[in-house]
Length: 364
Image (cartoon, rainbow, N blue to C red; front, side, top):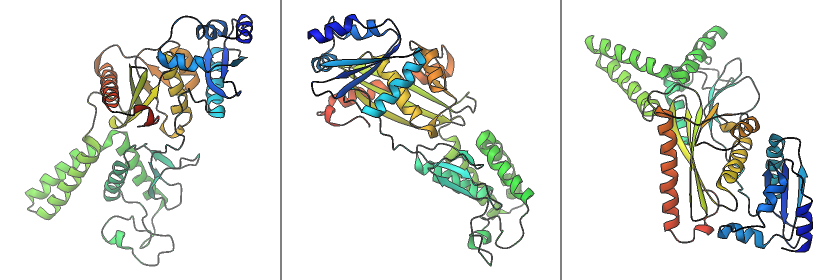
């Protein structure tokens, strides 16, 4: 430790804020946040650390700090500084992650489309769908159950989709605004859990068609039921409501951190996101940085709540993210968190068993 750093350590305030570690070229190599700057920054230069933290400390030639009014302000500033400087020893997530949504457009003749752009318009968005094929399958199902406009407004004659029952038919007739409202209400209800009631009703209609010996109709209804079960029920989480939530678990081993996030939308476990990072500070510091970058940088995937293991400063992080953090104590939700942590442990062990982990980058 050089004398300049010793002198600056003695002047650190006992207040919240952010600190920026610089190398001999003046490049910011690490940004951190502290409840008490004096205690947190001093900890880097005293005592023993894991090899990765020692590597970071060995390259620190100077540091600067910014005092903030509160711990939440420090979290916000830390996130902004990381995005600005891209320090080599901080967790850095890719910003181009964009999941598809299913959207009911805000038009006189609305359409059902798949889009990756979420705008502040009057359209209705459903998702996100981390699995693109799931989005396509779900839209195809809705096109069969509740068809909206599929043809261009310039169409002068009935389109093919209308002839096979996949278009509401503004190309062939006058469709009232009320009729559109009825169809869009059914689509909204479908995504809010109504798909199960739809499946039950279709099964009744299938039995009635079979009793009438209308086997062609019965087969058509059977295909629709199978499609619903394949796209909506296959990965349902039993005993959960339809709140959009994420489940986060993590594991630490040999200086590496794995974070697993399961996206649950409308009660359905849709897919996971897995990330691997070298750890240069406490694991909880890395988790906090991950949460800030993952959710603040990706507004499309922001859920109502996050189920996760217990963390320090949960109230501060919750205020920072604008998302409710829950540490479940029992039941299905606790089991989901345990499942996410178990997946993180297995994934990290598998990664460490392969050669060249450090060259694989941040994102799986």
